[in-house]
Image (tube, rainbow over all chains, first blue to last red; front, side):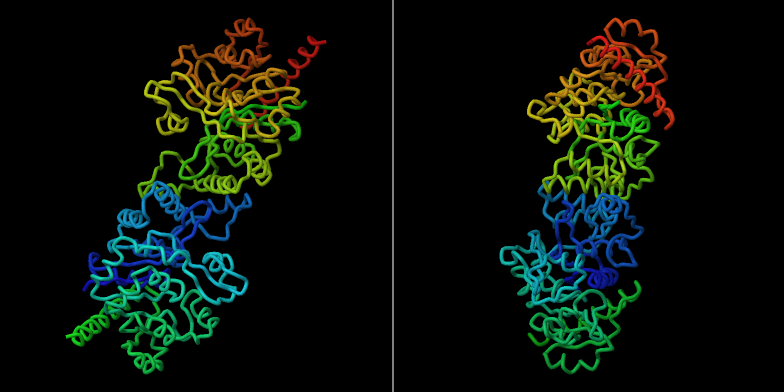
Length: 317
Length: 317
């Protein structure tokens, strides 16, 4: 079974890692959100892309989920001692990635090619694609005005109230080479448990991606468990936008895109409502604490996905 | 006594450090070569300026003379693992300096202001001035063509034969704010034991600097000892340019600029020839192995300089 996954940061990276353990590398493509990419200290930083790649490469910091394992912070300490901006935590090993990526971008290489080269160097088997080679920054709308995503997310610690989102330049952006092909050729599309608003919505805002996802059998894994996000501001965003944060809300969010929905046992009371949306529900333990959890959830998602694929093809016959 | 020193990298930084221990900070200005500055990995790197500042701040790597003490190399290792250019050794703590300097330069701050801010943050007492806020790259002329200085110095390890030097943009460059004033107001100018060709010549190539140095009592300290440079390619350069490398050659190099010349005991046989140039000779132990050596040499240079100043003012009366 050929699988194409859509992923944002830490939660998405964990399931992507599980899928990478459960599938041969040539059968897995991961399309990653680049809406939270930004320029900082003259460096192009791609937080979600790096989190996914580091996680797949076994280089990720197991404590934080982002950044590198065995990391040191000497460059940032030295910069902070000079009064430089240290609000965005850049470790020394991580800096090497940003320096080399920025160097290659300035030399004219597209992000997708750089990502492919980096994955080869890191020994990452599956194909990892940025959603687009074009900049497509996520802008957070707040009562105090528009905030670039990392300003909102890291500098302001998600404190400002959210009134909406804008994916700047989405109408002009092109999917990165391979993105539409990977969606078209997928037997199953998996939407990883990433923030629907700022990790998955940016990916499907790239022209052609929404239609390509909708055209194939797709399952999403809920990023909301018991009304809370495992990590990050997804639940806070739902609440601020006037929507009760829940697995059901996530299922509704992806309604037009998905055929099946995987959510946590603690939310099993929502099963009927999710089924009523015309979405096949699948209840299991979705919190990924250990490496084994990632693989197990991935295997369950794939098994459920296979059923979805089978039912859908039966229906179409 | 107000002293203004001209310095390049490691040797110059050591004597500057000695001078800083021997003089009250308000009486010492150090004008530093920026001809070997270059852009690398999108960062503006000022090797001599950093060596002088790190040395004065007590942050320098005592083993190498350049770079930071207690340094780690994780960013460069990470970059090298991705196939990035690692020929120029950038430590993690050092990177913090380059990132913050580059950020400020891009924001429009001049190098001299950034250097003053950094020195304040590092607790450096004397005034450290880049020779110019304008780029003035040293170009090494070789039979295989022109080489930017760091290409010659680090990447090619000074292997290509030298046929001459060019200080690109010298005619258009302005001395950094404070440079001409520091030279004019100096009771004594000290040319530190830095490479005459690529550390001191670039400084005096800045319009107005040569005349300002020549107008004041000045002593130079030889960077050649027993026909060899303590560090770096100075002796090799003299030989390739058809000049026997020696203390005498260095004295001749600075002939029009200096009144006194400090050189090593091992070269004492050259005393008469140096005196014959109309330059007052001073023979002592000039190799600075320990911190105490730096202070002792600085004190001897200052004492000798005081005599030069006295004699010169008597002559002019």
